[in-house]
Length: 114
Image 1 (cartoon, rainbow, N blue to C red):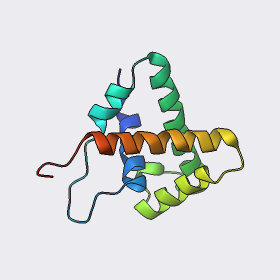
Image 2 (cartoon, helix red, strand yellow):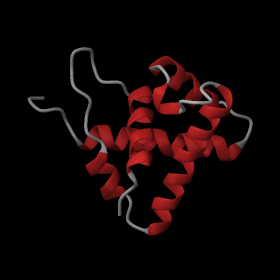
Image 3 (cartoon, helix red, strand yellow):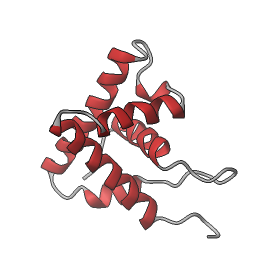
Image 4 (tube, rainbow, N blue to C red):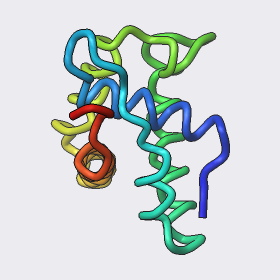
């Protein structure tokens, strides 16, 4: 199962904010690992909802016309940290799932030449 392009764009930016590549190194392609982890339609829907929530929050708080993907890395990281420290459990769980996905995607695909 896979995500639509807009959701992948948001996911790439989440991973970039949480686990940026070392200076001078290219970013890791997380698509294969994410696609492999999405085994059911329910998984796809759940991830799409989490990514949509990130986009909506960015549009409401920071960038009404641009959204999450157009924020700087620092702004994206700050928004995700707010999710992690939220008083609402569903937001903390959403952050935890996105962070674990970023860890899994980064660990399962090493950089060329590494």
